Image (cartoon, rainbow, N blue to C red; front, side, top):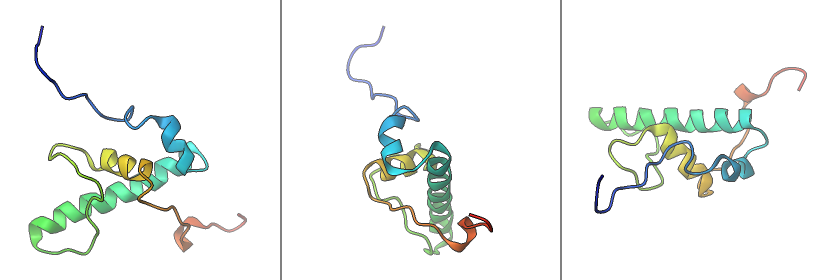
Length: 94
């Protein structure tokens, strides 16, 4: 039994999926949106070590051990990102 204050674990349950769905049309769109942002965050950390800064870093405070996808979900939940369709997202017939 542990006493004192322990940080509340965060992950896919925080922020709740229902809150995240307010920012996307479907679970599929949310997954694509968050994955793209997580890749940008991951690239930012890689470039940071190399001295290059071509991507925007996390827009929310984060812990060193936090995964890029968790950071992306929190950015989406806080309304810091706006989903837009690019040419790569459009397919013939849609």
